[in-house]
Length: 599
Image 1: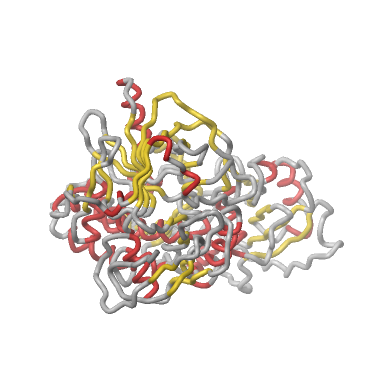
Image 2: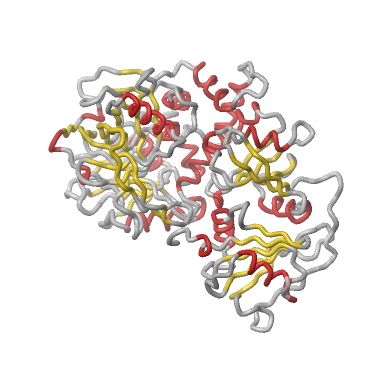
């Protein structure tokens, strides 16, 4: 049996699990975009962006462990092609989008900045209304292009070269992954889920986690704010079955478009066509009224009954904790189709940086121009990997143009940002991608007695907290005390602490008003935040530090990336910050929160 990538001619022999060979042809030309996943993989092989794993591997824990290690390599490592998967006829590809370079290639560009430039070019041709919603502006741009998806008539579409229905459906034939020891089961982590509005027939696509329950059913893990969930409720009100199709392995532009937060009723395949510069070809499903990309690797057709729920989870998430086991809708599979010799694409989540970081970075670059054009005073944005994108955002602003609170309120109208825990405000001339400049802004400008902004935002129906690191007209009082270098000895540390380190130690600078100390508790002492704050603030050896951050004792104090990840994931602005006598304690211990098992 031969496995032939159709667009290029790169020849590599890969032995399948059944003993037959894959033949990857040798590339002779490069197209600007890709019809399907396998064309993109050809291109990545040409660019030496794929590492082939030859040895036999298991879908249970092993592939996820290898992928997680690779993703931590410089610049995101390589995509991994597991050609010999235990108990499977099909290879597995992971970390496909796991670098800025590969994510740009996926969108047909040399750099992720080019997608911002593409949008900026189109924005100039649009009549922008004052305070126009950013996502509505993006929708207006993609609707102006002539790249609507097209239904094709083909005797045998690629995605239906092999068809299984009824009792022949068997989800266990697909090499889905069991990622972490305490996960609830094998998971489909990168499905493009197709649904339709029962009133208008408008198509919707999204990416929702699916846990395998048995040969014919999975969970459908969508949240209340997801468009898929909204449509699910509509079917429930009409007491109708909800037809659903799940594509496993689409062309990269379609996968990217499915994760973007377009307004309900706007077809994500328009965005895919805009990126591809050509329409997405569609094929009618066999057992349901739905269309799917013709060049997909696998397609699962089926339905969901409103109120048919089953517990899903736990799931080890990119927060570093296992999410709870909760009921979600059950997806019943009526047909399972695939192309000949398909490749199963999976993504792994966990401690960043991982593949989802680069996918989210691309979405940030896509949205940046429309947000800037639609929100006066907004200058730039960065959602750091350590904050797993939805926990914290750095926003640079022009305070001469608009009030920062109004900028933030408008920013939170974006659907994908509504779960964010907080904002860090920076001056527009601060290099938002330079961590040293951001730290310097905090050390010089942040007066926590005045610069913690908390205010109600109507679009999310809750208070939002922002830390203002911008320069002020009246400078805060300088901290004239130079903190002594801290030594971790039994004489300097109280018994309830394991270690203490000065953070951002740059030498004494008279412009700095803040001196930051991180402390690591010796064990889980059951001290509540207010009690341990009093102990720290009144300890003689800590008096020269005006900001003290408390971490758990199992954190590597020398791993600054890990410290920031734990800080952004564990911090609850309303509960974990205590200010007394112009000094601040921030408690980011996970243990006190009972947040589940760290992995």
